[in-house]
Image (cartoon, rainbow, N blue to C red; front, side):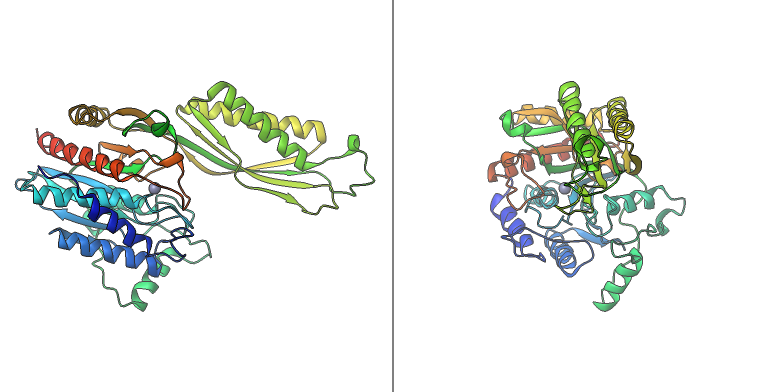
Length: 423
Ligand SMILES: [Zn+2]
């Protein structure tokens, strides 16, 4: 049996790094529905066609390549996203697409004809860089499958891009300008399906444990909100320390105590991050009268997420009382944990044992398109390690060996699944 061809996979990953708005050395920027993004989907479509797949694209810019089954009872889906954050690494999303494509080629080169359809997916706007709506591409796929309108498809979600334009107008405008004709129909039909996504871990756990494969147990829930504290700004030389209503100190104390709480009680099962903070008026010569900061909580169990959120709010109330501040909170995102399919996890575990790969169960702290598929069909994720756990960064790196391993696990998983569908 022929193994995954790492040479051609690396070359494809390299070529995709050039479809970027920023120089690849500084990081890859391929934001949905830009020239670079369309270059990327064109490249993938070409490669799919060369591999003998039938190719479709929907109006969201999601691409699907299908290897027809001999006697299909359903479809096995694999893929990931093609869009990136600003100055991303080369592997996030792309690796999952290329692994799925390589699997299609391996099936053909090994002379294997599956009973069921095998569909390779390359999806748009997972990162939400264009719209701030993460997973927008796969959400559209899911809504097409869930709509009662069936194959005529769901309406494009009523989203706006960051610059306030209607999303569907942006997409239509782009296609008209470039004279792109895309059959505007959903890329998937309602049928029996199963979804397996390959991705790099984007964290340090596999590498630290010297593991080759991660079988994702669940995708952690997420609470993302913004807190605004208002006190009184004033002269930094004249107002005594004991009489200040300094919002920056209140914010720092909340962040520090909440981080300590999560670390002390939930170190292995939750995280808290304060990624953005703005101190106003923002002058070295002024007591900060306002502090606005974001809170991102990821958690294994819903109750844990809620406890941490309550702790943060308790700390906010404490500062309000102590300093007489005014506080508001606005929720940005609230998603429960997504458990992945137990049968698939066991099946992938069996493949790892047969291939003698060191694997472990792991949570995903990052959101993935698999969250949408888990709502409509059995879904699983296979992680590869990445160097130092670095991702969303130009330094992101997955070794040749790890790409090859994860592809070989995916390949055998697809073969096993083909026997299971329609049983
Ligand atoms: Zn990703």
